[in-house]
Image (tube, rainbow, N blue to C red; front, side, top):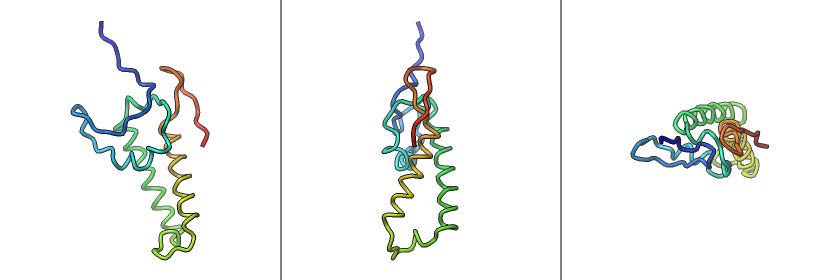
Length: 110
């Protein structure tokens, strides 16, 4: 009998022989935020592409709206890091909704 791999597992941000996609950028964004099971584990390439697309849009907006956060001599590093952390949590919670079992998805608090 043929069985599907379970999808409601903690996502693995690593390439395999079957899937050589470079997960490093996505891992850098989501590895600390996604420590729970998500059905997106079975759609990692597309999900990571979506995360990185939205991350780039968010960074572009931040650079345009808050350029002082990215200055080399920024005095408020805590604001930069807290903003960075909040963005990562929000993006990853949106793109990697949690699950408690196959086909039972739950929202993640951001």
